[in-house]
Length: 290
Image (cartoon, rainbow, N blue to C red):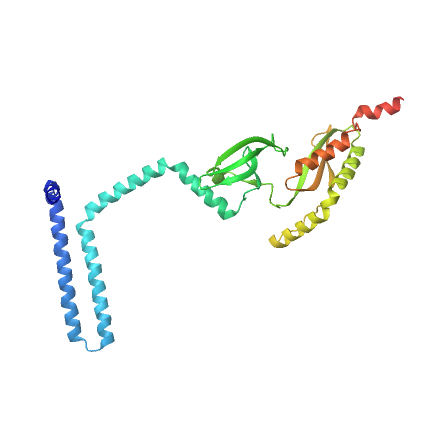
């Protein structure tokens, strides 16, 4: 074992320039230590006051340490400059190679710091929309909801979103109010259809289906707004009118719903309203013809 170590040491070759730097560094260190001993001895003999003596000893020691560091930097300046350039080149190459990973870490810190969402929330970012089931430093996993932005049924597909996307894209949290949410859906009509009766039917049916939990939703929204300092949103069902074009009319149904029952309540209202009623223009002409 000792022979192997000896052979290894003898195989190491040291250049003349490196050897001169080592010798210069050694001379500087020895000189600094000698000056440190001489100055400390002189201060102990020349300064009688203990506090002043301790102050001068500390100051002289710090001055000699600073002198030693400056001297070493001057001796090894060229080598340190070469080493710094090498480190910078390696750092640049590392950043370029791991750019996406760095963005993923940054996106994870951003969404955690902003508290954009949590496990169980329904979010949308770009064309990805679904319920969050897992998140880590690199990616966020959602169960897809769709198709489209107006549907609230799971498609059975899982989407893994890299956290780098959260750095450059806005996030829509559809479960911001947690237990109860304000759900909105659109029922389109033509201007000549019997949309007035449909509006009354949708409002009556919405009141009927939301009545069992309307008080709980109202109390939940009140607690939430008090906690976050927001205005209390109205949870009573509403049916408003929108005119997207000159020939069309949309009825916007706004209802409170439990977070996991949005699609169920929407389908129940639509099925009950349109099960035995036809609000098209043809249905209005039939009684007149009779």
